[in-house]
Image (cartoon, rainbow, N blue to C red):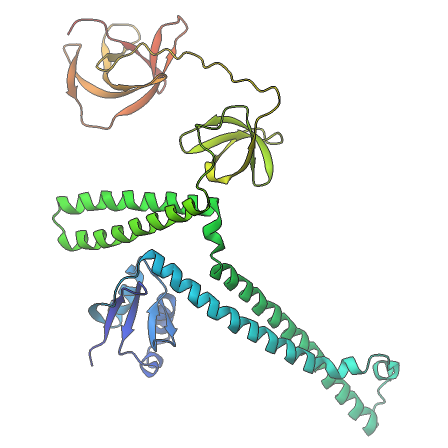
Length: 393
């Protein structure tokens, strides 16, 4: 029977078909190690399944090296909400199982230690010396040693019971879906999901350029799943009241509590808040979802915003000239502007004249606007200043 590997859409894992334990045992030691690195044996499916759920490159490489061929896909892909529901069901089943394991281990511990515990108060049992060559004394020594050995094994069972109770507690957290009640967790996952979607969009554009239809189909499936996940996360965020704070309701000088400590707001950015703690000599940035509380200090007044001056306009040309002549070394054209910066792109120069709209190949650069020692407005460009080109073109 042909050995095949398949992608199970329901679990998002690679499975090795028609591969028995006997065949596994017949492999070389190195081959067995390579399988264990990429796969684990799932008793519920009686098959080797990949450890990976997203990037299956290693799992597929191992399968091909062992002579497996691509068997395609089986099952139906679960939505993100369905996967979460499945995780909750499994966690609930684990709670009962781990608690039973813990109870059994605790019972074994008590049974192993009951002999020694029953001797508490019998000083002779613990202090009686052993007489060399005396049969009764030697027999007592062996009996006492066995009791102590069982007593120490009891501690191992108690440790096992604590381990299983910790596992049960972790399973309870999963079953309660507590992480979906945390603004910080949801905010981080939403940001990750948006980043993944942007990456898929970029890859789809590249795949369309190369007309790689199979890759496009795979990317669209993954992107659909990620969009479903993003919608689910946003819904969970809405259920707990959404993100309470943002750049519209925070001002410089406000106090915010993050991770249990209060800090002063230095700047409210579109996605993050920049704060200063009293004991930290620099500012730190946090997502708005991490803010636990906010309060306005007594006597707080809003600082007047400084009027930013940026005299440069879109389509203006800025140049860098030689130190001891009027030769133009580099020329750029302004394509965007803000109150404090400009976005520029390099243009060609002919006969010492910048050529408007004749752009060189390359990316745009965002640069700050400042004043030189003579109070002239310039564009800061690495270790040089760019001045406005005033000659007619």
